[in-house]
Image 1 (cartoon, chains in turn cyan, red):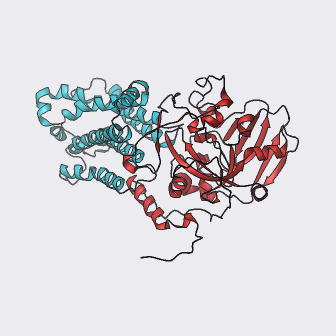
Image 2 (cartoon, each protein chain N blue to C red; image 1 turned 180 degrees about the horizontal axis):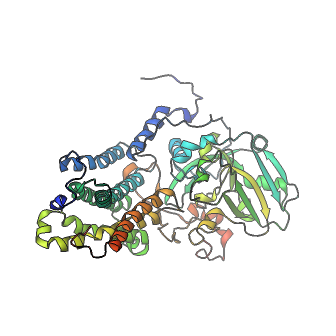
Image 3 (tube, rainbow over the protein chains, first blue to last red; image 1 turned 90 degrees about the horizontal axis):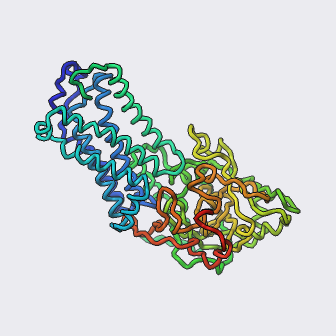
Length: 213
Length: 314
């Protein structure tokens, strides 16, 4: 995917200063480090476990939304951040993994019976787990070797699973809250716009060649 | 550094204010929010002398800081920290509670008179939120039954309906784009539940008048029911013949029933009610504890529900 940054049209995009990708990871992990440190120091409020759990999940969703924004940003505004997409996508996966670990270890205390019951009986847990499972093959194939091995077409098709993950993540969020507070609805709206944009574009440009966004 | 303090200093004064503030700022930072100013704590609390009660639990009360900084009061926002941050805008004086409906002596009580004319007790109760967390709270209040006797309900009165103040200009959570609940917040009890000696109207906690975020100046506490039954900032109590509408039941009838008794065997449709996290216990490494039938008050209240299918009347 890094190679596609030089696709025609993208080249004359905004001249953004290029920063090393490692910086994306470093900055991306700041919230996690902050949260764990503040948690250990008992600075996450009255219910620190719940705070940590929710914040990690929210960051996973934010990075997921960010990866989905990269294509529209390039196509509509000529802002090319493609070279950072892999890092952002992986950050989403890492945060999802931390969120899951927090749920398994800190929230449920590795009580396997309770965890299995949760997964089977509670739609938001079922959806959350499924969303994580969907992210795993995407994370595993987020490297150049995998793209070479699979071929760009197949790889791109697999990575369209990110749309499924985004829908799953937003549903998971909506189902975990009482009533209809604004935050999950805002994320749902953003994801709807980002996916709707792709749908509309694919319908408008019916005979699209090669371009798989 | 040791600073001598007079011995009659109220417990609320012991935790320095800066601690509250830095904690909130930390949290705001972690949430990626920008809080422009420090968050004031609301009106000054006044001491409220109260007698001890045999109904109190001997469990360790949750810290005053946690009780007053982490709760739900959707009129001020859906976040757990919103009430503490935003409820100071609620004007609790003057305040009257209108008691009407099927009673011989309908009345409108000024809150000061109601407090003065009631025998206040400290009731240290467990509080179990429907979301799966719990606290132990030292309320100050008086039995709802005392008030009920004063207004003399008619024989036809079967239920008691409660209503929270609805003041959009003082309650920033009530004018959101998608209302989270229908306002005003309403709750209800069966008359026998309302008359039960465990049921109190609380006017204080930790020996002082209620902070706004906890439902000042007067709120309901029914310790064997989920926390949302404990309607806050009450302006009206009506005696009625038919089961009154209740806010969360209206919002999601399949998830929140009229009774809302704490019951580890009847799950919320979306999450388990079998266990709970006790706030202030263990921090990040909090261990879940089993939730008790009727929140541990089964001996006192189970008889109210004999013969009822608690799966149906959740």
